[in-house]
Length: 285
Image (tube, rainbow, N blue to C red; front, side, top):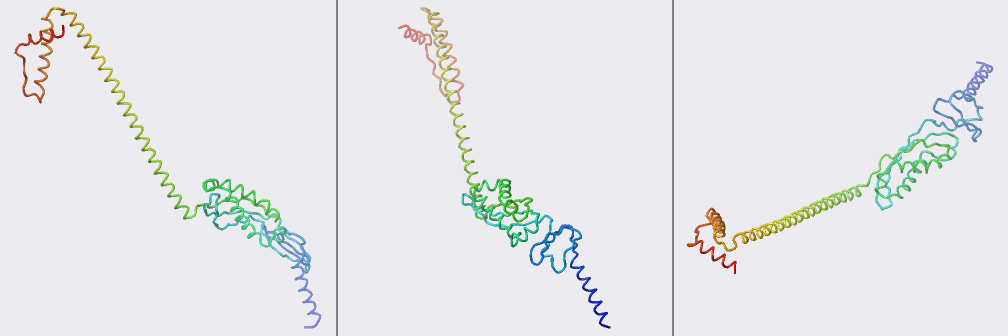
């Protein structure tokens, strides 16, 4: 092999190498950051791109697809000193790759740390019950707090979601004891209110019965008074009708006594008319 052929082969190899170094095909979903002599020069989009060989180099290959960042779980202390465990997931998109690679050392770690810090700050301003029941509020505040910061790195925050937000095991045990005590207190209050209502109803019933008994006694007394007045006006000085009426009442009373299971002996006066006349004589005097 002569020297001319060797030179020709070397020249052809250099041409192929130069062309390969000057042509860059960027796949869809990526952008390439090009440096010229160590300094940022351009960002190559998807497709065929030409650069200057030996001067331009592809320093970074950055995806333009949405990136999912799983934020690790962490312990957070609420405003009322309760400990809860929470984690999140963030969806980001790199709009300007040159800012993302030159603006921060590692944008994924930086965003994870920023989300964790903001999450602790937001929940630290809430009570335990408020933090557990307001995921949407926490998510909105979290997105608002970190969107401006990561925009300086050429990154857009698509959304951020709170995956889990639960009390710690110690707090869960305390909450269960508190809930049990609250249920017991409500049961006691309900029982007491029921007893109170029953006592009031019983007292009202006794009062109403007493009023009715009193009214009945008054009615009976008035009826007896009117009956006595009518009998007195009717008999005047005549004893026979009075004897008949009193005898009738006396016989009814004796009949009732005879039917009583406790009655053993029944005594009858020997001279009923004389007894009646004696009673009438006493009344007249």
